Structure formats: structure tokens, C-alpha cells
Image 1 (spheres, rainbow, N blue to C red):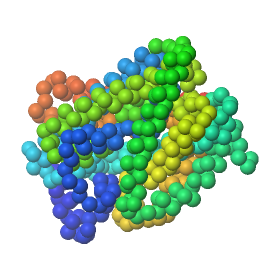
Image 2 (cartoon, rainbow, N blue to C red; image 1 turned 120 degrees about the horizontal axis):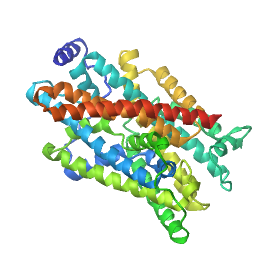
Image 3 (cartoon, helix red, strand yellow; image 1 turned 90 degrees about the vertical axis):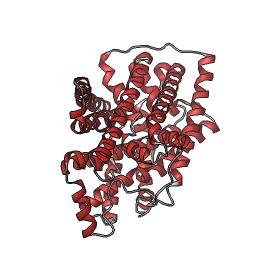
Image 4 (cartoon, rainbow, N blue to C red; image 1 turned 30 degrees about the vertical axis):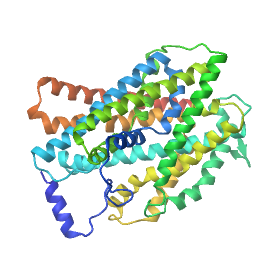
Length: 431
């Protein structure tokens, strides 16, 4: 419905075609993935820094409420991921469209230019939001390491001083020149291996924290709450949605799977495994520290070499992950503002903007909830159900219609309400 025409005309006008948000990081095709490798790729695409805020979310919402939300969000996210896969298969096999490589391509195929624009905007906001959370984590962790003996909340991060300015601000401003250099690299070929390092560090840190939590629970358990009330429902939901955000990669992952008929089963197993891991990590952290659980669980770790190395390792991990996560943003912005050509000043401006936002947001957990409630609800729930409904409506029963409409409505309600609640929490913590 215009998708093939645009692809044909653009390929005739320009060679090579302008880069899009789905352009591969390494620029070379990869061999198709086996089932174990597909499982690993799904794991890497979903698990990130958001897991470190789960114990705090358990504290804010209650352990039982958090577990119910985590497993519910995991099931709903899996369903919506499969909606995208089914929609693409329908368009390619039945309706004869050319290969749809990305979420943005799917948006254009279904809704035209407006569909791609909406997906582009949400992808930019979500990826930049992840990078803001990275800088918040790095700044707050450094502040905690400089003042390890004090048991404090958000005010601790703002009160720690280096040369007269807060430790968080010093860390973010100090890293800015290095980030400008890293983000100036045209190709990420040399940075791509750092993504493997990032995931190894994440898993190692989670393992160390869970062992530390278990030992504390064994020695002296603390009183915990199962349910905190509906007033904190939207906060916990936003963090849960953020933790499972990886829907932007699902079409790419399915394309690289060797046996595509088993992709749904592999995805279901991976999502179930991640949900159980998240639930165990969040529950252990909350059971260990109770009401003293911090917004970043590593801040609760005691003094010592291992604790310091875990926290510094996570900071280094997120520091080098930053340019990888910003790469899709650069592709979209450069395609729209500089004709698809590399533009260093646009990249530097975006890095500066992300850094400024990180300086203004004091709490890691509150920002996770904001990103999860706003753009992640739109990308994860609203758009997949909308695209599926528009493409497959003629083959759907009233139950299918009702399910898609219900998910869209739920995503909109949760997104608007959760965004409002998260903003109120952020502004109230600054006052």
C-alpha cells in the first residue's frame, strides 16, 4: 500500500539507500541463529540496568503486588511481541509486501508516513530515556561510593560534594567529553563487543547481589509488606514495563532465527525465565533490606572490595553501553534532519541534552517508572495491538477484536495515569 513504491523510488534516487532506524550496527548480515542463540539474543535484548531498580519497586508496592505485576507484564509483553510477528507474517506472506525489517517499516506499511513518524518518536524517546537512566545510575553510584558510611535517600546523592558541586553533577559533567568522543564514532564495529561485556557484568552483578541478599536474609530477616495499596500501582507497573522493554528488537530477532516456526516457543521460554529471574532478584533484595532498600540495590551493599568492584563494573558497563543505545537515535535524527548523512554536531547536541535531563532527575527508580509508563507502554502495548487489528481485522473473531481493543485501551490508560504519577513523584522528590 505504498511501501513497495517508496522502497523502489528511493533505491532508484539514491544508492546506497539512506540509513534508517533498522540499519544494522555492524553493517554486515549475520548467519541465522540456532534455538539456543535465539534464546540468548532475546535475553540480551530485554535484560538491562532496569533490573537494579526492581527491589526498590518491591519496597514501594509490596512483594506480592510486585510479583503479580511482573508476571502479568511479562505475559502481556510476550503476547504483544507475537502480535508484531504475526502482523509482519500476514503482510509478507499473504498480502505480498516486500521484506519488513523493523518496527518503523511495519508502522509505515500499516499506517503510512504517520506510522513511521510515531514509531520513530517513541523509539527516540525510549532509547534516550534508557541513556538518561544510565547517567543517573552512574552519578548516584559514584556519590554513594564517595560516602559509603551514610544511610540516606535521594538527598545523599545531591549532598555529596566534589570541588563544591554535587558528586552526581561532577560525574556526569566529567564523563561528557568522553561520551562526546565515543558518540562521534561513525561505525560501532569496535564498540559492539562491549555489549557482550555489558551483559556479562550485569549477570555477574546480579549473582553477587543475590548471594549477598541471601546471606543477609539468613542472618537477620526484616519485616516486609505484601501489598502497599493501589496508590502505588502505577509506579510499580511503570518499572515492570521498563524492565521488559525489548519489543523494538523482536522483528529483527525473529528474522535472524533459523527455524521461525519455533520462535514463539523460544520467546515464551525466554520471557518466563526472565520473569522468574526478575521476581527472585526483586524479592531477595526487598527481603534482605526491607524499608532500607535503596532505589539502586547495589547502594545497599556493604563496604568492601567486592562491593566496590561490582558497583564500578556496572558504571563502566553502562558508560560504554551509552553510545550503543544512542545509535538508533542518531540514525533516526540524522535521517530526518541531515538527509541520512553523518552529523557530529547533532550527535553532540543529543548527548548534551540527555546529560542535562539526567542532572535534573534525582531518583533512578522514579525515572524508570516514567519511561516505562510513557513511551514503553505505547511501544509495547498500544502500537502492536493497533497494527495487528488494522492488518488482521478481516480474519479476526469478535474475541480477537475485543482483545486488541482492550490492550490498546489498557495501554493508553496505564500510560497516561502512570506518566502523571511518575512526574508527580519526580517533582515532589526535588522539592
